[in-house]
Image (cartoon, rainbow, N blue to C red):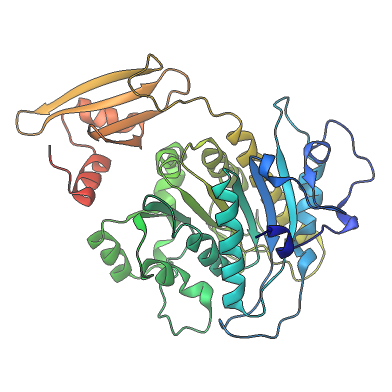
Length: 384
């Protein structure tokens, strides 16, 4: 099947009148008159708009060009000296029903990833990540999903708004192909304590906004270890992202959001990235400023993608191995540090090595078992 059938070409309005070889637009492969040769790309950007709430609802006012403000900002950005192959596939056509839209998104992401191309999705509603999630159901190995969102979105499946229960839909999907689930940046006053207890019982990881903002580099191993990242733009505070649907004054700054996108780009494991919640009611300063944030996150993701240096061959000379003895009962814990990137990994057993931070090593060096190691051992049932 040709995925070209699912896409509308980009509007002529997004084409710059002052294109130069120094801008992103000059280096992108864009779907205008002809569909792009996406199989040669490393990353494929596309947008999807679907405002429906019910899976079988048919009526909807189309709004394909809603993300064009993001594209205009992105295309005008200066590119680095690194050469890259990134394409913009254009507008993914919504299906006859919302359920059909999920299936189209699933099919497109699946086909792209089969060819080694990373989908970068811009969506108006967070529940569209259901389609992104379903694209992994035929993956060889179970996946780790990371959501960045101020809320858990675990409402009852009968809720009228799928963006309030899409995580519930994902976590209860049968067959289950999730190995692990992580949630980054939740706001305590927006999450029920019982939901936190459920996550603990399931050995899911959840990180409060305040804890991450104290030391954002501690989020890097969490982002690095995911296969699939779903980012709700409501995670960015309203002063930086005016289209925040809750007008929430608290959240990540624009710089922090770009930092997280950079971490995602640097990851050797992330194979798809979704940015959800860009839904401008009309053109204006708020939409423009919000578009700048989204475009900036895309820029940093792509720049990070082309800065990867790690081989993940932990037996090679590119890594330094540190062995820490906790006590006689627990035995030794092995850590690996990349000579090229400075990143750290922790070993659970010979076949399981997970991303970690330098602080995990420091904790072990003091004779304390790192929380990350304990949670992973418990979750995976690994016994030394």
